[in-house]
Each structure stands twice: as structure tokens, then as C-alpha cells.
Length: 426
Image 1 (cartoon, helix red, strand yellow):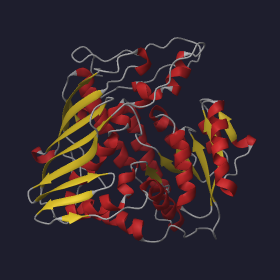
Image 2: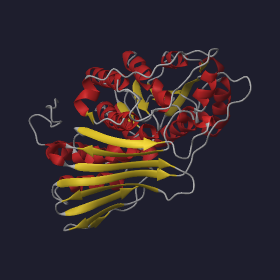
Image 3: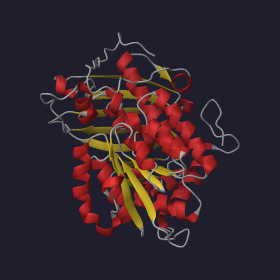
């Protein structure tokens, strides 16, 4: 299905397109097909690439989501991560069938996990590596669960979209870690939005404002590359900055509600609190205005500052009402008021939906939608870093930005801090 230059879907209205996709998601969520097996109930053999907390959490969610799922191979850059994962996997019992021969380390560990007779892989390394890992998995004919975000630069986004299109041709499933797309109260509210509950969307806001996160200090004898990869949150080339790594969740909800990516953005941000070298080269706050078709404007705000108020939510304003969503609430105010009930665990549900789609033969493919939402966040970062207005068309089709340092454990790696008005737009 193609889109025109304004981001509209050819042949059907934007509302009908999103209405149909939301209805499909709701049907998957409540279909009860999570335990339908293809091939006579064969086990789903899963490989994990990236053995940090999120990777181990995703593997556990995958096991809990459906019957007859096994973790059979794991890979990470570092051996201590492998050792930690194996210890934590003990609670999975017979669902963990990892053996020493299917544990891999190094920058090529992903290739070895993919080659380990797995049916599906979980991609949970720092986001920088996602495009290469996704391409390898799809080329090898594997289904994929990949954590968000899915790239850190426009070149990576184009790679992810190419891989997602290839997955469609091959009949391979891709589900992303944008779990709100599988969360019952989000699905119910979005269904009502597309049924006209708040009229036409005219604006909105989205937020991920919170305190600080963990940080890894550089130890004596630790190379720049090792430290960066262990302290990956704080380096743009690895995480994309926190507007990409974290705030992409909220931006994705706005894209979902409006039904198309923005046409342009203007952002600002900086390093006000986290200024020490241990915080790498990322910013600690951003504010971005996204302009969508028909003049719809959305304020995006994210911050990681200790001691400040938190807000992680989305607000969509329409001509007949307003939607408010966050991790536990889905509320419509206005002419058609509604309050959603509780949702099953969305981190588990996304794996239930993925595996059900594989076993039914009607595979989900969320690759393009998460790539587009990731690109929105990248656009916001690029605008804030440079002080320039960024258009969607330029970012998607012209920008040559590719954040690719040397994979070198011996040399020094210098990562500059962006200065608006001085940092060049590439």
C-alpha cells in the first residue's frame, strides 16, 4: 500500500486505513489464538540477541506469552552478560534450552544466533545495531521481535524499511517493542477515535518527562568502545539520544492517532544538568513542535532530570473531544465520554500477538510503522542539535546522516556534543 507525498494512503481515507489496522489489532488481542500451533504444535525456537535487562525481560515475556516456546541460543558483546543471562534464565526451567555451544559473544554474535536453527529472534541490543541485525534475520528467513527504537539515523531507517518490505514478500513476521500498540485500553480508545468520537484531530501533546537513569562509570583499563557499549544510553550513536530511545513511545501514539507521520518539525534542547563526561554526548531535555498534514500541530516534550515532576502521557485534541492516554489510563472527554478498563500486561501481549500471527500464517509486520515513528524522533533530535527546521521528505529521502564509529576496542573514540547553530545538518 503506497502513500502520496502528503503521507496519505492512496485509495482509502486516512481514517479508514487506521480504523482497519486498529480493528485488526483488537481482533488479534481478543481472538484467543495465542495457543494455536502450526506444524502440529512444534516448539517455537527463539534466539536472543542482546542480553541486557530488556533482552532478558523480553525473553521472559515471550516464554510467558504462549505455549511451547523455547529460548535456544543467546548472544551478546560481552561474556559477563551471557553469564548473567544464563543465571537468570534458570527460572525458565525447561523453556530454556541454551547450551554452551549456543552462547555467543562479540560483534558477530548476532550472526551465530541467527544460524542456530532458530525460528524467531529477539533483537534487544542498543538501537545502533538494529538495522544490521534485522537485515540479517530477514535475509535468513527468521521471524523477528525487535525492541524500539529501530535505528539512530536516517540511513538506518531506510535499511529497516527495506528489510520490512522484504519480510512482507517472504511472509515473515516483525513485531516491535512499541507495546502500546498491543495494550487493550490504547486499542479501545484508538478504535473510538477512528469511529469519530472526538471528531477531526486538530492538535495534541506528548510527554516523557522523568528523573535520571542508571549510568556506568568508566573503570581503569576499560576501552572507550567497551565503556560506550556498556553505558550506551548516553551516546547518540548507540541510543539515538533519549528522545529516540525513550520518547519514541509517545510519538508513536501520536502518529497512530493522526494516521500519518508529520511533514516537518522544529525542536530545541540541551544539556542543563547532565554535563559530566559520564553522561556521554546526549542532551537531557528536548521540546519539539511537529506539524502534521492539514496544519495539525503537536508539542513533544521529554526530559531526564532528577528531582523534577514526571509526566509520561499523550493527549489528542479533536473538534468534539479530547483523548488522554498513559500507561494505565485511556480516557475520552467531550461529546462521547469513555473510560477504558484495565489492560493485560502489554509486554507479554505483544509476544502473544506475534506468535499467534506466526502460527496462524497471517503474520504481523510492524516494521514500517515503527521505522516511521523512530524517524520522527530522529528528526526532532536533528532539529534540536542543529537549530534547523527539518522536513519529513528531506529526512527520509535526502539526509546522509549515518552514525558509525570504528568498532575498535583499542583506540580512542571522540564523540562531540551537539551545539545548536554550529552543528551541521547532514
